Length: 335
Image 1 (cartoon, rainbow, N blue to C red):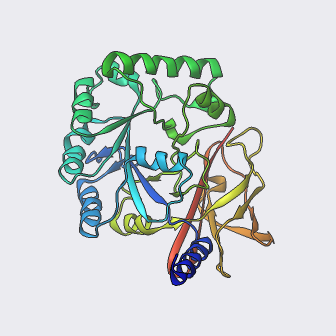
Image 2: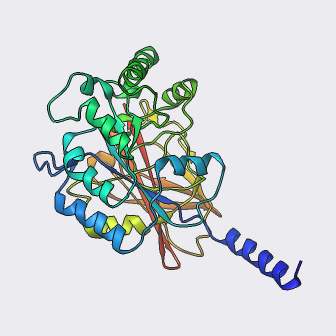
């Protein structure tokens, strides 16, 4: 082999080791143009601005299946990309958003809770429409049968719910989807163990962050978009955000009993190059900057400024390395 080529390959390998993965920014929508529900809705104008930005800037878009395949093969995400998903199968997705995704050849995965579709509920897609969506190139994932709060139910109840979902998918589509998203983004170790029993290898939450090979494959992040967090500037920021690669996160349990002010620790894989990490969270229901302590080398501890309220608690940590913003997010469920 040419000596110059050998030296070049060694240099490139070393260069890759010094840089963390850009990762995949995965976005989650619910409703489109339904202004009565601002917390789960994006306006048509917001949505079209997202698609326009993707198309005009040549942003690479992956199918969620392809993201999963890369994770399974332990491939690093060396090129920045995005992916799109939609939860709950509201009619507004089918009527407003899907034609735009389809016309621009942008892949999207629809996570379906089967019970409400089985009941032909107003405001939701029908099974015939879901079939048509698949025939036109869409992908479907599981979202339980009754959209239950999974960690708050018994394992037997959750198992029954998933089995009912499987029956409905077989009856109406002829197959069981292999992708899964937690309703409300809520999970726990017990729920994850159950998904493993059912043969799932990956699952998605609703906490912000950029997917990389360092993520918990059963709690993958997605940027949630609604009227408040769906403005073009925020969308563009999330598109270009890189992964802040976290390992050894404590507490390791996602569902916290009688622990409303947990000690949160993590190690950072990225070479921070002296960059400061800022972590925001919502103790006592108010989002604010939290104190973060560098315990040792790449190990950090978040000192919450108050207890969490019962319900979903989130942390979002960001840092700027060179010219790139890196983002890590996580969600706990507090009882």
